[in-house]
Image 1 (cartoon, rainbow, N blue to C red):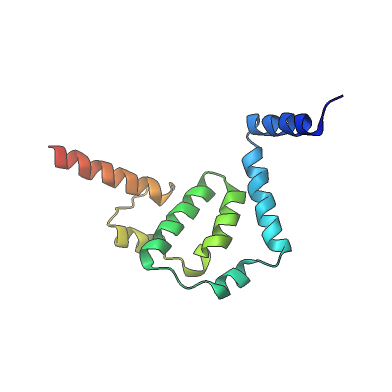
Image 2: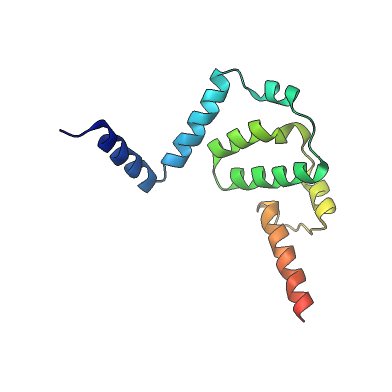
Length: 127
């Protein structure tokens, strides 16, 4: 007969191999927060406004998570970081970060444009 620990280990391994373990873990965390009454409004009410630089980083991360299809991770991150309550427009983010947004990059997360800009600056510095 299989022990409970062995069964749990096999189940966890199976979920990890199918890429479902992280999603389920994030969803469970989010659902527990909701069940405990730690919804977004409560978190927002008790949390001081972060500095602009932190808000921008949080917004870049959330945009990337959403674009990548990490919806549950994005939900948890959004609730924990309060990113949606103090969002800047994409245009304002580009201006603040000194990143050029074009029709070809507008469909991609801004975080990728930031990385591209950093790479270009490093390449120019080497020349």
